[in-house]
Amino acid sequence: MATIDKNTLDKVFRYTDEEELYDFLKEEVYRNASLAKKLTKRFLPDETACVDFRQEVENVFLCADEIRSKWGPSMDWHQIDSGLWRMYEKAEYLKDKAKCHEAADIACQIISSVGKEYSKDEVFADDSFDGDDFCTYKCVDLLIEMIERDVFDQKKLNDIQREIQKAARMETYADYCICDFDMLLCVLNGELSEADEHLKTLDTKIAVQRYNRDKNKWIMRKASFLQRKGMDNDAASLTEENFGVPEISRRVIDNQLCNGQWEAAIESIGRAIKCTPHDEYSYVNECCIKRIEACEKLGIIETRIEDYASLMRHSCSEEMYGYYLNLKKLMPDDEFKVKLKEIVTELMKGSLLFTHKCVARILAEETSLELLCDCLSINDKMENTEGFEAFKEYASVLTMAQRMLVVRHHVDAIREMAATATSKDYSSVRFQMERLLDCCSEAMPLVHELKKEFQETYKRRHAFMRELMRLDG
Image (cartoon, rainbow, N blue to C red; front, side, top):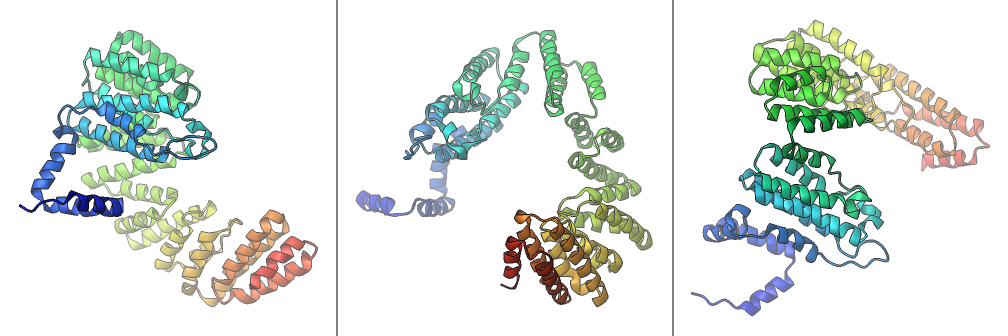
């Protein structure tokens, strides 16, 4: 067997970039079954014996690099954050392997260690960490999930409760509020107290919430508690009373879809959409997508048509194009053209801020030139980047007369914008003129004519004149 020269190896480790060395060793492990087995046995959580996971969390802080700063933390909290997320992922892995006590130890230790070190190291003084909770909220969610799965005995629940109550009193959480333990402590209380007493606590929590978002969380928590305690009639009543709460209806719908109850799911989705405020498009869209899935199972076409049309109306991205293609497949050509005109006309009455290019693409593919001309003429008097990009891309589809018409619409919009512009808006006016010049050749004479008009009309606005001089630059 060849001897190992440790001195040479030490030089290799010292002189080689860590990432390069890691990538090399990773490839070698993939090719070497014996080494892979040793590595797995040594480092994978469920393969290791008698590992002190709490100490591993502590080591994240003990091994953190020091940084020099006149104020703020003395430790590298970016490095700490990365290490804590690694430990959290290890906790998730242990939970999936049914080692929930070890997963809870990691989660509780992350919460405790962050609580102890955050205020001590004055992380609050560094604005770059504003809003960073160092995965403590994820740890809270993980603990709640495991508690509700009834994987802990009474002693472990008491231990977790004591540790979280202690953490909640720490300066980090009490004064700097980087994590809220109210929900977790309430869930623990529900496991450690009488059901009637806990339900009264939940009702109080629901009653005092000022915002629907927070109120809905507590309603969900009550529904979950009732179901877990076998109080099915009370849970059903609560669900019925609060079906307009997205979290409630989502759970009902998902359960029905999971069990193949397609007709019931379609009915529930219809109720959920009716109960949902009109401005909650994200949840309405989610419901439409699920109803399409159920309708496909039953071969229902009409409802799918309406849902795809709704999705097109309320999309804020390129997803609209996929909905358009699916809608087109479901309808005869003549009916589809009427439906598309109805949808696009409605869209153009609102804002095309994020869908301008997608709508233009659809109209170009359908050769609906009149609607395309109207679409490309829209100018929201902001920077209108998407609108000009759409005009540039699809100008060639239009006739020369239509291109001129679109250019004139934009010229009128820019003229109107300039009339009320202040010094902070002049660059936006110039930006629109530049983008319009870039769209098609027909724009050049009209934009230069507009520039001369502005130079004459607004010659006393020196800042505006300087912006216009840059137009040729």
